[in-house]
Length: 156
Ligand code: ACO
Image (cartoon, rainbow, N blue to C red):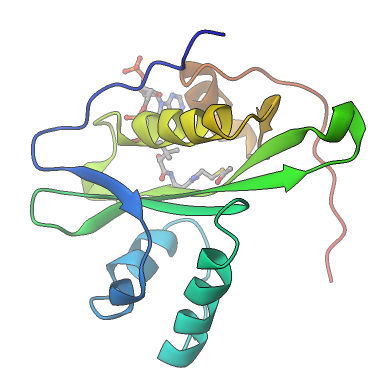
């Protein structure tokens, strides 16, 4: 199997896991709020969630890209589902992709997706899937993904 190609980040930019220290400057929250409502997350709740994710590293990969000023400007989550079918196979789910508008158009979204796919490949996933709006289909196609099936939902 060919490893997925991951383009290099611009000088000074980094791809890393979310940590408890990311509560302070709120840049994680600001970047996610471009995608959707983040809501009120007090610091103890944030820390408990980081502990929950870190206790399950084989499942949760909450990742960010920081710029040369060490500010979070892109987010993405790879969630690894451990299945019974396909011989106990694993499926990667891409969630919560967001790039700060001031940094859009620099291939950071694509680099985030390729990094998440690479994590999935290294974890032994047999596929990576995601749900998105019609307007983002071209972006995900540029990342190497293809339309498969139809998204459905049930909201509470
Ligand atoms: N329509 C068509 N092409 C696009 C689009 C689009 N909406 N967005 C990016 N592209 C193209 C770019 O032109 C580029 O093409 P090129 O290689 O020919 O130059 C390629 O896709 C890669 O683009 P990037 O620069 O990596 O994209 P960017 O860093 O701006 O990130 C993203 C794209 C993530 C969609 C960003 O616009 C964003 O954060 N949008 C708001 C939040 C959002 O909708 N997130 C996706 C939610 S779906 C989910 O989370 C599973």
